[in-house]
Image (cartoon, rainbow, N blue to C red; front, side, top):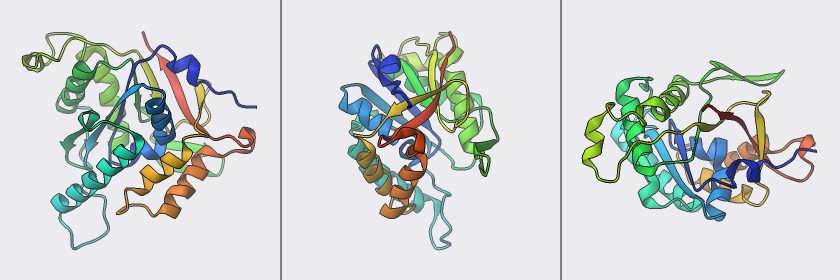
Length: 248
């Protein structure tokens, strides 16, 4: 039977930052974990590198309109998860253009220096093709891959070393900070896998995910939760899976 790794990972953590490429990524990959952390009194910041302003097949909508719609939906989703408004961050990099560049690293490093997290949750930084099981695979979209690379680079050494982005320190709330612990999503068969029990927060995950109504129906959000958090190995419990990395 799968064991819950929540206490082992989070017992000594006070602040957790989630860095994802688009609105709805946090809910899709870690919504139950985020809701559980907030319910446990942890402070959580969720950073969206883009506003998902290209993610539509509708022809009669502009990128600005779509970005505004998706941010509006995302604010509702974040409130559902219990995220404070001041911890709901949009970096406004153009959707589809994210690179592991100094520009993006700097934007993320600034948030790390302000919030000072103990652990970062982000995308899979290694695999272009994600293998869920022997019959199911998908592409690790470029924005996801590059967001993960930039977040890890920002965590070390760019947020730590004072001579990188010295302009950040004009804000009195910023200071040097390094992060060495990560939970990486989109890993399903790895020796570093850990399991977070979200049985009591899966309904919150679904409601938050469904708040992105331009992208998901309630049924689609429920199906996503079932796909990612159910398994014969879990019994009646629900789990989200991560690769846990300590890189000090």
